[in-house]
Length: 105
Image (cartoon, rainbow, N blue to C red):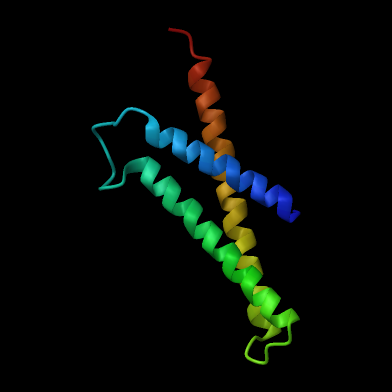
């Protein structure tokens, strides 16, 4: 997946997280942050993983002797798996939202 596509999907996820945070507060929160807080924290973790992987890749390309190729590849895979997980969560949330909106009263 290309970098602009990843950035676009992350922007969509952040928009959904922001919209979820603006909604009404539910009395059954799962801890202090609730669902919106957990969603936003997950997006931030995914973003940090991608930034770390990109930083190591740039350092390796620049010839930094402290950065090994295997570390770069592992970090890139971690970021990829985390992003795919986030994408699947987003897709399921959108499907659940559509199902709820299509319900008849």
